[in-house]
Length: 413
Image (tube, rainbow, N blue to C red):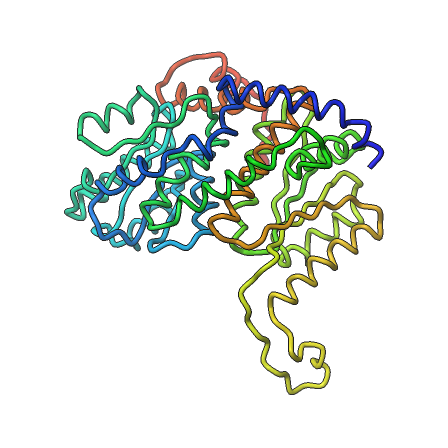
């Protein structure tokens, strides 16, 4: 608490910077305006142009162009399955397409630049699968992209419904825009409730650490990193939040891992990884900050009465009750050895809850970036890899391809 007290003036100053950035629509800061900037009617109008019925929504994107939709899809009730094509593993992609009824599927292609290699490759593969199945791919494809580039040209040439990636919003901050919401709307999810949750998070922004949960999380992360907590383990206690852990990992790593500072994100799932990773968190290097996330309300599922006296402790219990006790046990285990734990709670895992959760962590990340004094909105290391991949595919010689060719390796066969 004393560390946070000492940071309070810096947090107030950072809040003023964030608010100025939001007001002026500056790059990155504009993302925190999305709950009230995103037009759900515009998204639904585009989605309505897709041929129905739709049982499966395939999202061709990578990183922020897919993880937001995947996170929302796990937490929100939908009529159709939402599956992210966010890799170019041929075995997995072949299996997915062969097991999907393509005449009842839709494709959402997401890329701001429209030049992302993995996304473009998967769009072409899915398009080919549609054609081989005798399905008109133009009736079942929606594009979310920028004003120019190959995806925009594809949409214009084939009269595809298209939505814009919002200006000033890095991909990993775009879950509450058409980037994350279009696949959910196409699957029949309640995008208005998601945005309402985000708006509740926006309303909670305040200048002081002790008045704003989002800023408190960013400040605690920074303060603990200064004390050696260079790893941030995200441990949700709800399987519907497993993809949230992946989304968080990208947000935290890509936004804050710069200039030799930041935290390395670690993904886990309670209570599954309580039986494995907890060993290292509790007794390993003192380098990890653990965050648990739990809903206050869960569905009920009773444990049947056991007939073994050694199982009497399970009598009259619910699975949700056990999971909450597991979360409490994790916290107690860590605090007993002076390991730092942050507990985040939401009302329930639903459309509103996930909207508020995502917005809160975006605001926390922006605050942490201000305190770490890094640009939370660029990603130079990621761009290096993307540029190198494109150059290799084109057979071009660049500084990055020469670095790849000249690297030293030790092979053991």
